[in-house]
Image: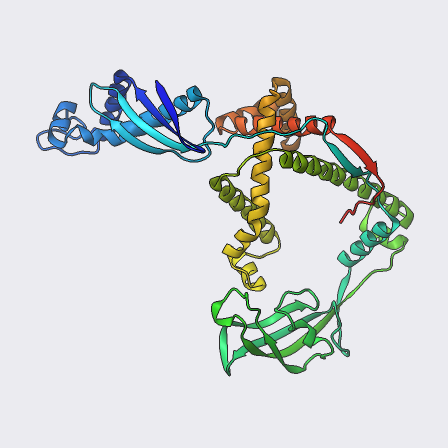
Length: 437
């Protein structure tokens, strides 16, 4: 049994009561769990009667384990009964816990805010059909050339933009070497912006074997406090210069990088892939425009806890991307001169927009009664089964056993909601090439 009341704008207090017989059942389970761990003089281990244990240590000795058994299910049932949608962990306060009496506890929890929906059916959107230009095709082929380039050592010649300089360096501030300012055999691509502004530019024109003093100033917003805005110098030795040598764009190149015999066949295949990519990106862009407009038409306040959670999610995704590049987040922060806190703040506006959009989409989903049908779920399981080469039923059991099926249902319902909004939108076609970068 549960009662609830609103105690703040997005916060409610649930008063939950659990029957005395369930309390007794939980206390008995807690006793059986604990009795084997305690040693009481006069009794063999595990043979202490419950009444003796409670008399010696007090009945409260069983409460913690019993509450761990009782509260989760009671809280979940109360949430379902009250038809609220919590967005954070509850703050639980035990009001009554005694043998032979019902358990009474209060749970204060923040819930999803109310959404005042604006116009969302038939919103008017300008959108361009995707196009891929010859220039984009040529740029993609040049990227392919770059990926299949060979690095050659430049024996006689100067460093140019795009070259890779293998260097040793030591940084000095006020005549003293500073921490983190030393490197050996470091491969630096000139023009990549990897080092602080002004460093790479001063290497242009240098030759292999040359030693050079480079003077730069750390940015005012650099991550390390002791280096912010400081003038420093680096002693640099150029040990080797490497230059990318691109292969010729011809039939031989097509044979080397693909299953095609001619460059024209490769171009046709690349163009088809670019068009497919452009169409997918066009759909994403269209969906984002519609969601942005509908969110703008609605009134909702993004709770702080949801914004913080979204920021963490975005940064976690970013960490995964950095790992693919062989970088950790601290290394990235050092290279860019930004702290993790600054990265969080940079992502805050976008995170807030995403939270507001998701709240609006959730409200539309509820109002339009959009759900994941059994047919939808089965279709999703078939796709997973094809990907992982397993039976659909095995895939479903896996999700059920790991408590993930509800997540899949929400994802399906969200996709159906977005598709519904796109179908309802009034789209005004305009002519504009969409980049496939």
